[in-house]
Image 1: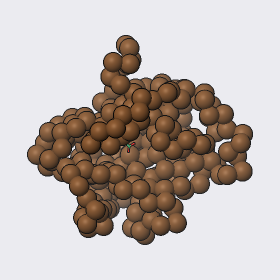
Image 2 (image 1 turned 120 degrees about the horizontal axis):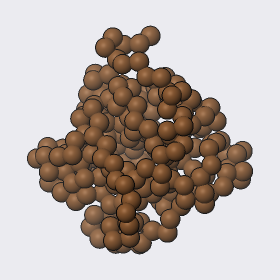
Image 3 (image 1 turned 90 degrees about the vertical axis):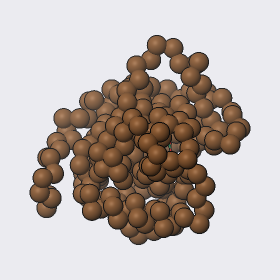
Length: 228
Ligand SMILES: O=C(O)CCC(=O)C(=O)O
């Protein structure tokens, strides 16, 4: 059943764009009600641990059920299966919180530098509108083709593995503002970061990750991209 007013998304048209660019924006995957419930729950569950911003990772055997429902939602799965392929298992999920008190931009990085191993595919799900002002993502199309060496940086802002701004040459940077309920699906070698949150309000997103099943890991070439 499709919810009324939800634009029909035809993921098969997006397959080549996903492989070319390393990401895809899927509009209106979730309803505003689903996003509001997920944001409320993320706020409650992370309240006790939350500093001014945070990334809270749940592995697949520990994820609260509401978040599992969002991560495994049939609309997201339908898109992933066509765009990435059917051979994906659920790995983990994380709410990402950027508070109004922090104006630190998430630095450029590939998630591969943190996770290692077989490629992962994430969906950055906007629990509320993500804008240039409140810290939406920015990406470098096509950067998923190889895993890069990251600089190791230790400071109070987290993100210990970074690609420094001065190491970027003439890459095209694409901002990715999203409406609540949209999802940006991306390969774990896609270079991405986010703008600082200058909105005076908190910003919430939720990112489930998937990867090929264990039996396929040794077949997957890590250093250069190839479709599953
Ligand atoms: O949401 C953000 O600001 C960045 C999150 C991110 O890049 C990540 O968790 O890998």
